[in-house]
Every structure is written in structure tokens, then in C-alpha cells.
Length: 301
Image (cartoon, rainbow, N blue to C red; front, side, top):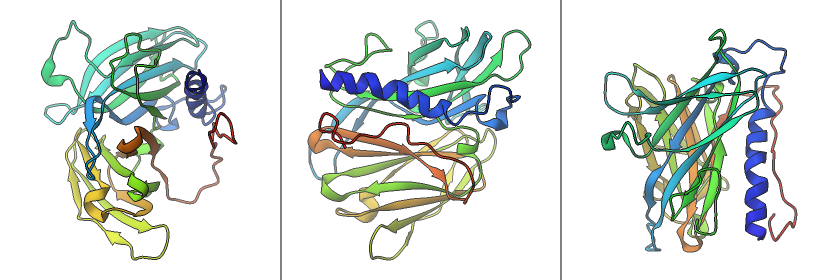
């Protein structure tokens, strides 16, 4: 029951985290405002995560994406997933109409009518929104829940059949812009490991990505080999392969392309998963919000 209460609280607050950073209702939305396009660097489907220490595999994982209309009129959202084959790295999945305040939840899976197994599976995702009335950009919020062990029969719910539940709020346009970014926690200590998912959201150009690992304590900065990521492709960095066990620090990411990044911090030993997104490394005056914190609540801190 406590876990169900936690899930019931966590999902709306994740969505609130997106809404609290939105522009005021009176502002004119645009793709560059970060609210009319939302990005997910990684949405899994039937994804299994192995452990380098020999603990049992974790998964399979499935991604559940929820999108909400923040406008006072009906909008149309278009779903596209990243694919690594030409001619277009953004493959159309489906579109929905949402009335004011309405939301929709779906699995990372093509609708059965399209039935294209080659296009199913884990990938990044981009969601665009426009008003039905005039096709002007519209504002949305979006969140992804990542569940393991069972395909949800009701996409809007998780149950006791799901061993692990995590997730993250979608990135805005600014969240994939060509600015220095950082993943504040990546780790291999205490039987944890971290998988970093880097997705190139540029429609035409390869992304050259520079990566630096900086320890949280004493130790030298590690410069990883230069990455080249094709349009629509996701590169997975397995932190254990680069630093071995008992390391904790942060990852700095630099690219001149539109690259989104998330870190899956996984502990297969106890079926735990925490996901965090990259943040801008450029000093700004923006207000950042932690939408959900615990202090000794049902043994959570």
C-alpha cells in the first residue's frame, strides 16, 4: 500500500515539475520556448539491463509516456521516435487530439495497425504540439515512467506486477540545445552501475560529443574517447566499463549538436533504478525546482 501511495504521488509531481518551469499563460508559445516540443532521449521497450558483477538481469523494461495539454483549447500532438536509418531520423508513430487539460498515456510501441516489427523497440522520442484551430504551436507537459517485469495492461497504471518503477520528465528544446551539460550523479559504488543514454536529435548532421568524467572526491578528470552519433541514433555509455567499481562523480557533456542525455542508475542486486536528466552547465539566473522531496516519509529520504 505504501508503494502504491508513493507511485500515486510521484507521477503527478513529475508532471508538475514540467509545468512549473513553463512560461506564463499569457506568453506566446514557440518551439524555442521549450513547451511546444518535448524530448525523451530514451524510452525502453523490452529492454534488459545486465550487471557486470554477476547479479541477475534487471527487466525487461517498458516505457510509458504521458502527455498533457496545458492550453485552454484543443490541440494536436504528433509522436515521433528516433530511428537510425534514412531518410528521416524521426519516424512518425501516431497523433492524438487532446482537449483542454486532457492527457494521454501510451507505450513505446507502434499502434497495432502499423504492425512494423522493425520499427518497434527502444529509442528516443520527440513530441510536437499545435492548436487544431490555427496550427500555431501549443504548450504541453510530458513524463515517462519506466517499469520492469510486465507489460502494463492499463498504460496509465502500475501494479504489484511491476518490480521496479522509475521515470523522468521530458526535456525541453533548451534541454537538447548545443550547450555544455552535466549529469550530476553517475556511479558504480555500492554495487550500483550507470548507463548513460545519449541521443542525437539533429535531423541531418552527425553529433560530435566530448565527455569528461570528474570524480566527486580526489582523483583526476577522465577524458573519454570522442563520440560520433548519427542522426536519430542513441549511444549507450556503460560507466562500469570505463571506471570499474567504487566510483562516483559527474559527467560533463559538450556538443555542437542537439543531444539529449539521461543517466539510468541501476542496482540489480535490489531491483532499484533511479533516472536523472542532464542539466545546463552554463551559469544562468533561472529558477530550478525540485518537485518532490522526502524526509522520513514511509522510510524514504
